[in-house]
Image 1 (spheres, one colour):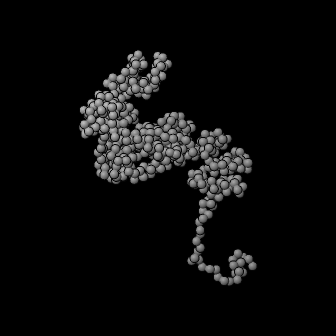
Image 2: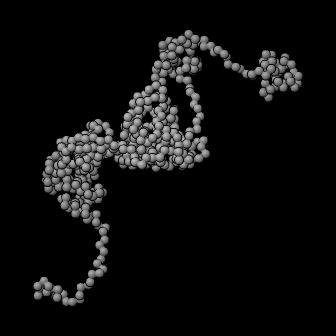
Image 3: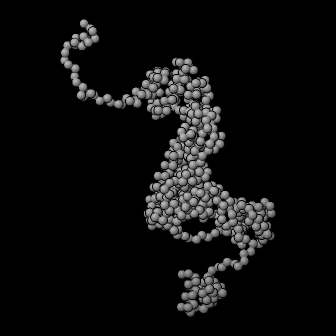
Length: 496
């Protein structure tokens, strides 16, 4: 029986007096009286907690904590750091738990790093979306690269969209939105962001922002409202902050591999779509079921997509390259010195001379990179075969082409001599213009097996292997030859 219950029962039911209950329980008379009066049972904390050993250091600790108000949040004193400084600098000999207890109370009193409370909310269907960027590593064509991935999430349904990019530039930012709006089938009336430099030019006091001109046009085109969080307040869009971590743990572990960025985005697109069958904790319906409800509340997509293309004009230089966004992109060598116009997409660069498109390249981000298409230089190198081994387009290409091409080049040079052999080998490389790579490689391997050392022989094998499976139908309607003596036919040729 509980002591409190025993005392009250003994006094009220069995008429025991205070002295008797004190002898029976071992408690003092004052304690027995408190139990009878129904006052709180047990120990209560002191109104003031003394720190006899720490007392002379309290002013020092308060000074350190007060100075933290002007320091970055991640560079403020922890209780452990306060204890270590007291030992090293002040000669403190007390225990660390005492310091920890005082620091906790002192921070509360001084208003430093106090834990905040959050308001439980029920988002409105189809009203708010959240957007953010994350970083991850992937293997593209066997090379480890660092990528940025864009996330957009519905606050109501939890449906989300993820897409990879090489950078966080404004053009990639807009392209990600365009793909996200297509994925959701509509536009959220309100989108919540950090203070991204691609969207915000200047952060003013409170919620006021001076937006980037380009973002203002994009926002007006799709008719949504942008809402920006307070600085260092990621909790204001906690859903997409959690999505960044969720996507990294679930879509990027193990490190994703793909032949190209486009293939990688197709993989993550399917994973985002399959998440619709997931039921989040505390919800009685799946993500897709909630999304079907909110889909009708989204803004309709415009008839035409926002033109997310930049242009530049210039002239191709003596290397048959055009400078676009601090990088060089090649054009066919015959167009060296021509005036050109370049269209910059988020994922590619197209180069025009007049109305004719002469080159298309995957866009590269960075500075001073040479993006060269070897095919643009083959005629020029064929005229100057001694430049073959040092030509940058060829050196870049040789890193990825099959070993069989190196073997074929060596065979051509041994058979025809270095100059003629290289010229004839370049003719083989030109076959890539009209034939698939696997067909050419099969023909090259067959040429090596049969000791063929001329491009015409490779071309013949290429045509033969391509058409080897073609079946020629018999001529059913052709009349048979008459059954006569063969001498009759010999007379047609003047043979007696």
